[in-house]
Amino acid sequence: MTAAAMSATKIPPPNRNQRLCTAYPFAYHYSLFPRIPVPLPLRRMRCAILSALPPGGLVMLALGFIGLGKMGRPMSHNLLKAGFPLTVHNRSRAAVAELERSGAKAAHSPQEVSARSEVVMTCLPNVASVEEVYFGKDGLIEAARPGRLLIDHSTVGPKTSLAIHAAAKKKGVAFLDAPVSGGPLGATNAALTIMVGGEKADFDRAMPVFQAMGKAIRLCGPPSSGAIIKLANQLLVAIHTAAAAEALAFVTKAGGDPKIALEVLGTAFAASAMLNRNGPLTLERKFEPGTPVDLILKDLRLIAEVADESGTRILMGGQARQAFTEASLQGLGLKDMAALVQPLERLAGIEVRAKA
Image 1 (cartoon, one colour):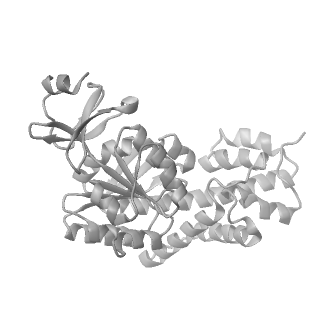
Image 2 (cartoon, rainbow, N blue to C red):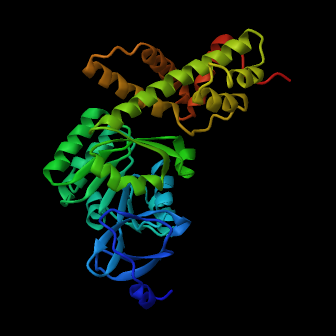
């Protein structure tokens, strides 16, 4: 359909942030600089965030993404597949170049991302990186413009999320803490769990963006609620990983078949996502990084800090932290967390494998 035909079609303009789904095969994308209409296919038939324009029709919000690591890169690809115009920034130029080939625009600083985007997302490796991107010179808070929305997908403590929320609010900018779970595979398959803290109106505004990246999306409460629940998730991941490693080592040392044990335990009360994930990797001796030991150890240190600040006793979490620390000290820090079984194997003089 030509642009002229589209403009002649009587499509009632939606309210701001109303979603246009698959009813129309095309929408008009108005670039911010300048506002020139360009036909844009709604790829993969996904919904998009739209705004009403006088009488020019429809606009898809421009997005920005900072942090193109193992999670941020596939998340950004899914935003592009969903049809969102996307500007990206990352310290590693290789990751940016990959997304440019898929249709993203490159930016050289967080400030440049902010200038081009109405919604900016971050997915960064640690608290220091988050604070630098948000509060540093030419950072997102300094560059923020009223009416914009900032979303942080990083794993940080509630104190960090609340500080960003307060600073953004002073600038007339909305902020959501929206950490994710599901690992690189979940990010690639747009199947992440997204746990969100913030205002309901901002959550509703961001929902079409979240739907391009995840399947289980939940507003968990006011600002910092998402950050708190993500830390609880990481606490369970660490404890369950340590418990699964110990159980497999126990079965093997006692003379059982760990392969049969996995098949049975996977349907018993003992079943867990970590047992079902890490068990097969252990049997196949596949310890190349998916979720590295040191990444979980970083999260456990953060959990300990938040527990101290809130006066919460973390007992099993402390034991799990010792196990991850020992694995890291033995040179396994960059291996997948399933490698937590290897120090136990050395102590027991065994190797966890299926019996012939």
